[in-house]
Image (cartoon, rainbow, N blue to C red):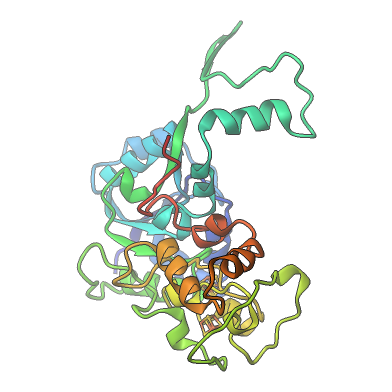
Length: 321
Ligand code: SF4
Ligand code: SF4
């Protein structure tokens, strides 16, 4: 069997998705046997011009992790789309915007001001900001321009498949790679691979009450949760009701930590954060407005909690003026 031509790229990302690929451990040797890599910046030194020189559709598979935050991310997304038969949005940031898209709660100007003028570790009396192009004796240098807001990969180019997770579960990654390498029949384009259709709650074995009655919210940083009981029953925010299953309940079971929602919304849910607002509303004990306000006051940063991974593809998308 001839080897597959593969690219792995990171846009606005932390690198965790690349590490998760290595977390398939010794199976990575099988991946190496089956694939020729043409771009994988975190692992090897490649030049964009070498990718530009490839014939259109030359790459059998591209895994694109990271959101699209600047002109370089967009340029490479468009380039890899042209060069790839199958383009996969790999991980939460490419899938739904992920953690970088929390920036969509702010204006670009506010972010730049905070970073280059106000942060405690910044010493910048002349308020110098990075310039997209700058003349030096050797010529003109350019850096990518920051977009006003953070986009998911499919807001820039057509995506064939989505592999959710921050990062995706290594066992699911292996299943996806195996399916592509073996030429197995893949689902129709647009499908989510390596995850279930149901909500995480449907796969959770913690004991839970039918009727929740939350009086106040606790913070996981200052609470030792009961490992047997539903987190929501303990007043801890768990995104299980509005998150796609398939991660193997890595946080809720393996780590005694509430789900943060990284697999995105399950099938049939339009907006993960809005659905969580409804779930929380139904779970509050208080029925009178003042008691509801008191309970909600104990929940810091609800927008950040509920849209932690899904801001780009939410109905809100970004802060609207
Ligand atoms: S809310 Fe969280 S802890 Fe409770 S059942 Fe759902 S996934 Fe499990
Ligand atoms: S439990 Fe939730 S946050 Fe943790 S890995 Fe699974 S989907 Fe992601």
